[in-house]
Amino acid sequence: MKNSIDPAHESQSVNETEQNMNAQESTSSNNEVMKEKNAVQVSTPNDIPTALDANEQVTTVGSPVDEITNQTCAIPVGLDSHRIYTWEELSSQGFKKAGLRNNREVNDKVVKKKMMSIKRSNGVISPILFVCARACLEQGLEVVDENGNQLTLDNSDIDSYLVIIDGQHRDEAVTRLNLERKPDERSYDLPVIFPQIECPKVLTMLGESNISTRPWKGTDYLVSLLNSRNLPGVSKEVSETLELVKKYSTEGCSEIAAWGYATGTYKRQPTANRLYKAQSDVETRNRLTEGSNKYGREIYDTLKASGLDSRMIGSKEVSKYLIEKMHDLVANGTTTLKDAANVIIKFIDSLTQGEVTAINQSAGKTEDVDGVPHKFSRYDVARSTIHQLFEEYQSKE
Image 1 (cartoon, rainbow, N blue to C red):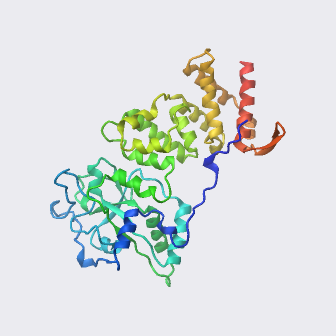
Image 2: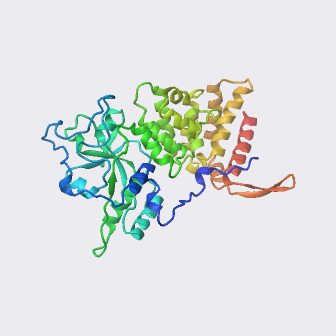
Image 3: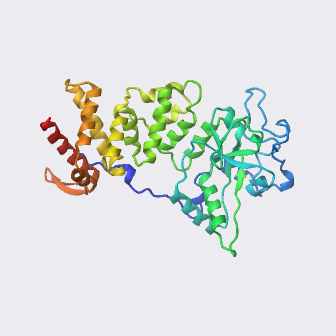
């Protein structure tokens, strides 16, 4: 029995010092700008152009266009990419926050740590990175306002929306601090900066701005990939698979288990490098689902209806055992993949309430293996129990 504790259920530490806790998401370009300035130059409200009003023409205020690439640049007309603004100043001129529909979700634990750090530091240390919504939309990305409403280029006020690329945890931390502050406590504002490069590719910037801080996990690259699912060349199968992986992850599956259920195989688990390359390479992206099948999804749905604990279903040990058992039945030459999947599904359906409870209540233990003590996680024990039950089930068939 393999000693393998499911990484999805290990507690994750946030290695931040008091001085950089709320700065982990800042880009290296932000740091260069800070170093180049002997004194931070902050704009005043009068320096900022008024955002596009619903009754104004699009040509009055918008986003500059590169004459060579014909690509919309990431900063609104009239704003200076070398200047640090405050969100209070920008919002007073009509600018509004927006986000990418499939950006990675805010981690509540990280937000709370940032709130404490902001209070200790008496403010936000590093600026939040924004780009104009128009640039995102013209690059095929989906943009939503703060209420989750879809934004398009047809919105008359689209040039008043700015999209957070790096710093959503700091943004949420400041929002909560201001909502929860007592009458005698100060309010906080957000320093804002725009990209230091002309007309960047937003998806590339989204990934690169996080590489130099907390390394992205597989699900973070997945979220970025989801933003590109409507781009030319992306197959429908890949888009559907990515959506399912995200869905399973939010329902308690580890990254490995989510991919296993979504693709029905454990033979082509994508590495972080493959996921990163797939962001900009359509061929790599479309190969993510090679060898996949729908039966892992059917097994997952059956498990969800069985009463098994979501963490148990989402563990690598349980998911890998069932999916690989399905392929083992085919390898034995006695059945098709469809029939093998039906065997697994009928086995799950046959579990009694007592057996389901026994699996859910599995506890880790230490046993001697060839005279050497080995620790087995509760998921290892659950996998062993399921194996025994499956062997008994097959002997009766």
